[in-house]
Image (cartoon, rainbow, N blue to C red; front, side, top):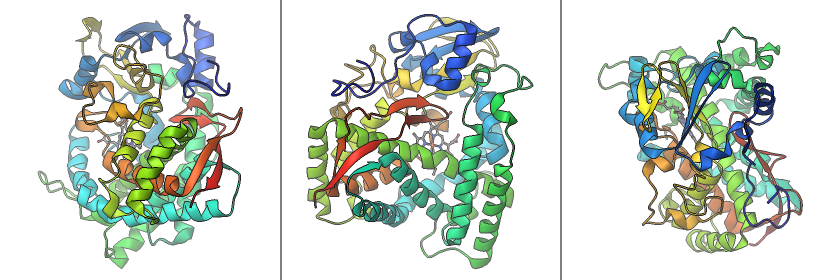
Length: 455
Ligand code: HEM
């Protein structure tokens, strides 16, 4: 069914490629929307391989092969240069980018920061952001771009759990710098994805300005102020990371490592969570029955309150809706790795330097792994869910699984339950979002919904 036709039987999706594309067509398509170069075959087969500009590549959708890449033979599959080259200028050799021993000690030092107890302590910041969205929505009665709203809400959360108390000037400046950075590097070239050497010029790198340097300066100043002022009564991510120590080597992060990791949390955690919420609201508007069920759960648990720490674990249907949203619209829809040595995946030969792509978007819609994969059905994630663990990878898996997964799930539940308990969201005829993969899986044109108060 074409995107935008009303009412569609299924939520919006990207038409994947059903015929071989030539090299020029592949490059121009990838620049516009990386999702459109994923062959439709990836939703039917366990593995699709090819060669573009002399680089051998494999797209992997087989759960056992994915387990091997992400866990059992992790060291053979480090992140591709593309991810690293793109992000390193902004976030240094932080947790997201580092490999081997340098990654391992940072992960051990940062892991306790994200314990369930610490995150429970940060929920009031999430509740405040949910309340602020409601206050903004009070003054509108009509159409709102909920993607914009969710970007603002999750940014408030991440800036208040990293550089809280730095004053609005501080977080505004960080916000502006991050946005400038993301805009600058957003259009990932296919040349990067398949691993063509970095000396080949890329259009997106030729733009001017230095948003990254501004971003670091603002963050350095905020960290220094906190060092002088001491920890807050309820420790935030900055306090926790300042205390963090690798139990094995007793190493602690120096100021530059602290800054790079905090900026990593902002870059990795802010837009991804906003996308989850925006897509969830679109899906609720798409399926009013699910929305009604969600509302009765939220209203009976919250009793008119904003969701808070006491509600975590009490919103099972909300959690299922968020998990199903992450299946249909995984924010990190496309991961890539580079093989270091020869290996075998799905009985197929992998050579050193082959590019291994993990098209999570296609994995989550693969007909061999999911029943009726394009339909929206939160009940897939009930207690007797039967999918293979490696068929569902919104946060990846293995030792490098997203460190912020629990943080994101809690934040999404707090904000979604609060909003649905108070407002009804409806689609506007002919204005559906179109999924577009730039760095993340974004709704092109925003998520514009009609909003009415139900309180
Ligand atoms: C719904 C929201 C989120 C999604 C879908 C998401 C997804 C992911 C994925 C897929 C990875 C693995 C990337 C790869 O292996 O190539 C990852 C890693 C990571 N994420 Fe998230 N993330 C989310 C929220 C967050 C939040 C809230 C934070 C921090 C506050 C965060 C911090 C990180 C970090 C630091 C890593 C690197 C971990 C490592 O390599 O040890 N993420 N995320």
